[in-house]
Length: 82
Image 1 (cartoon, rainbow, N blue to C red):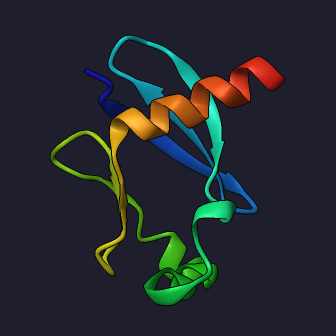
Image 2: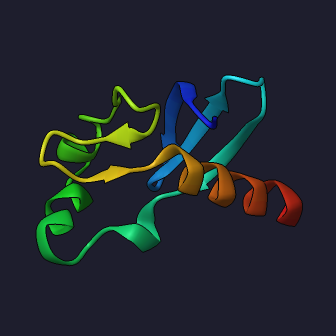
C-alpha cells in the first residue's frame, strides 16, 4: 500500500512526499486545484493546512484529498522526468 508517512510543502504548490517504503519525490499539486471548492487552496494560508489523512493520502481542511495511490503515481512520474 502506498501510504504517505511524511511531507513538506516546498514552493509554488510543490510538496515533497515520502512513502512508507522509503520512496521520496516531489508532487506538483497546482494542476489539481483552482476550480470549484479547490479554488480556495490557491491561498497559501489554506494550502498550508495540508495534513496526512488516515488512509495515507494528503488532505486539506476543506475536504479535498488525494488518495495515496494517485500520489504515488504522480510522484513516480515526477521522479522519472527529473
